Length: 351
View 1 (cartoon, rainbow, N blue to C red):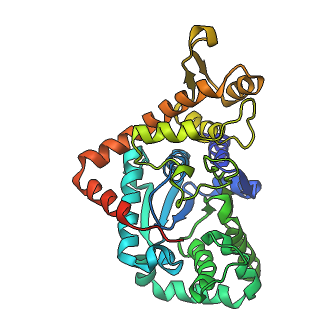
View 2 (view 1 turned 90 degrees about the horizontal axis):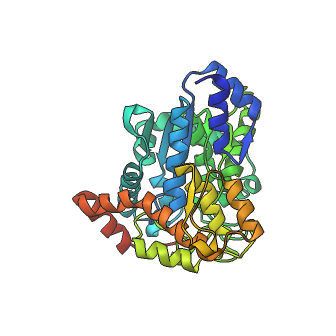
């Protein structure tokens, strides 16, 4: 794979890249760049966190990157997830790793590393805390509060002292993990920019490159982001086939409208990257069976009215169920995985 091909694969993951010239230079100078991705273990895993992350990680490793996945258990505790119960948070972390392995994330060969924040920070506290303190010292409180979106909070929320400290720690993670690329969602953009600003403060030339991926909307009308507290908002990774069918059937999918249509978003960001095609089965009088080789061809048919939601939705359900079946099988047949999902489902999700 040549330099341009590697660049195209890595850049293709992000809806936004800060900065493209820096990414190209990084790939020229470093054979195995380090990509950082992190998550709070805070409840059941939805399809964006499961399938989209697996697709992105597999693309990054195929292009020669090493991916460090930061299991932010301490951060979930700071953010009062699971009522701050670290044991429950860590059970959820184990459950999430099981899902990624089952769905097909390529974790063999050492190119993907799962790191628990509590363990890593404790073992290298002498490196971590001076970094956090320096970031905190160099930033005014309003600048840190503007980053609270990363925790699923707003600037108007009444934040605890722990939540104020959270952005300084997440910013420190990037340097602590020696990340060249921050590969997180658009909702994490502000703290990644904070890390680049910190580089300016300390006169560091090599800034982390920000590669922010698209955020899938919820399945209901007007839901810009999936909600873990609303089961109808998202498909979960271990949902049964019937659950998927019902959720897609009830999903917002206006005829002839592609923009802000959650069903079309699922097709663009999950189905096509996974299968590279999409087949719709229809009665002969409705156009017959058709296989689309690109999202653009599908979108053109849908906008013209050639493809109706009544035909698109069952085909979408079928494709998603095909992706999720190995996960269901794993949680059905593996005793450890079965026990984990039982515990996770028993936990009450806290905001």
